Length: 464
Ligand SMILES: Nc1ncnc2c1ncn2[C@@H]1O[C@H](COP(=O)(O)OP(=O)(O)O)[C@@H](O)[C@H]1O
Ligand SMILES: [Mg+2]
Image (cartoon, rainbow, N blue to C red):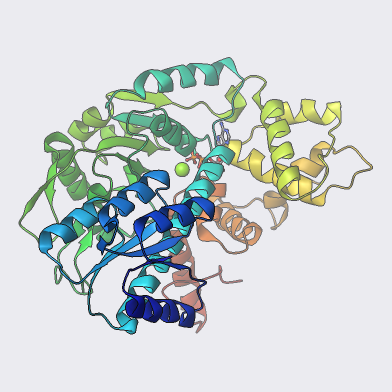
């Protein structure tokens, strides 16, 4: 809607909007504008400041009050900085000084639709995130996990550092997220660093950011995760994987809540709550000299130990039911039925990959199931029920050495995950860096007996 008393300007504006492909309505005073906005509200209003029966600023205030989403552009021939500031304060989307060209007008309108698009995307992404976090919300029924949850709910609203210990796949990240969602910082950022996945030499800059030129490849200043998490929560995932020198730096940040970017000398103060996870026993890592004792004490203010799936009574059946429901919905398939014998067997299985393993098997079972028959144990836990024996032991001649088994296991894991190293590492409960090192090692072995490409990042274990 164009609100303009000068008929020539009004006509020019109308034709400019029409050229942009927008449908436009024009009025010449405040009361008409109010009437039209009542009848059929416009998304965008461009109004003169001085009108015969009032002032564009009042219109702006009224329209914004009625609907915050409406966009109002103020235009005037007598611009002052004060009035521009006032307009922006009242929520004007833009402020145009007369005379302006139609391309200036177009620019202003395009800017608005871009902003609108971004806001829409933002709302969409937020809803996606909410959905996702719902899908990954903490499921439990055992008394063992109820105790964990009780502790989580107790420490969540404090700012205490929390150390979450547990085997791979037990749900440490789900617990960390729950802690965050139940904390007073839930509206603030939640940032995660996977210490095992970031290469050693880049981890410091990942944590603290760097200044331009701090090292080769640092072509621009970059904010680290600590800065991004400011005011909120930072999850240091797999913290046992960081080097001793970086542990020293981390300790200082945790104690003083300040740091410098790599290659910078300005001290940056932050307010961040720290959550950390580890799949190793940290106390033992301290004894072995791999983890600083002072950092351990600092992190270990409130330890939460997550039990193995096999230690949780009744939970295999419960979680399996939940996961089957979820994946059936997700893949548009009927919920598979399971025989009661199978449930019994599943409860006794060791679940070395814990909840992650169960979750993956459940998804697979949903995809492969046909409606007619009940699922058996073997349908759910593949490769494991073996009258045929252990596939790892079976695939060689004689009794294999530990190194051979390790190699076969890694190869099997890579095959199962279609070569995805992160997943393969997760599957067998080692971190991805260890996996990478092993692959390099195997490649080194094979390079001595063949002329295979000396690729830094082997995709597969050489078949030899
Ligand atoms: N109690 C739980 N309820 C729902 N999902 C879970 C639970 N525990 C684990 N999961 C799922 O299992 C997988 C592994 O969990 P994750 O938190 O990444 O384990 P960890 O960090 O301990 O290796 C994820 O897909 C996660 O959503
Ligand atoms: Mg994890």
